[in-house]
Image (cartoon, rainbow, N blue to C red; front, side, top):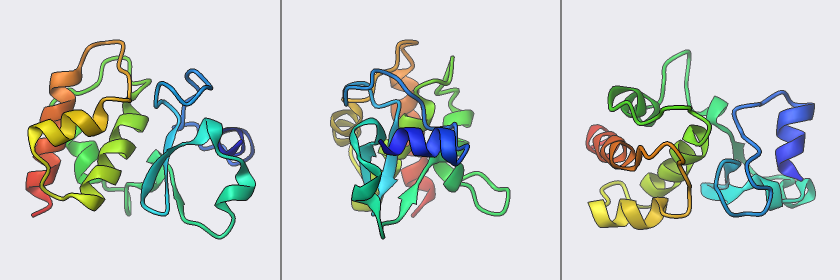
Amino acid sequence: MLLWVLRTDLGLTGTKFGCGENYCGACTVIVDKEAVRSCQVPVKDVDGKEVITIEGLSRNGKLHPLQKAFVEHDALQCGFCTPGMILTAYSLLLKNPHPTRQEIIENMDDNFCRCGTHNRIILAVQTAAEKTE
């Protein structure tokens, strides 16, 4: 699976192993601008496609606006779900640069945060959307 190639072979450990069953979102990466659960994607399925992990969002040592917004709003506690949350939000903003609060909630609904930072996550996504105008 893509998850294990990223983590083990490429050392990109920002992508987390959560449930392994396409359920929690901790392993979310971007494949050709779509958020996918890497625990369920065979490596052969991404041949020739662009794959972005959390490590790939920053540019020249500068955090992406979503990453900055997550820090600004303290939208993380343990941080385990954060890479998947940020990449799911990134995929949403690629498709819909100005989502409503409800659209953010619906899009983020399948990513689980056991620390309960959901309101701060929503605020972070809203802030990032405002800063990308």
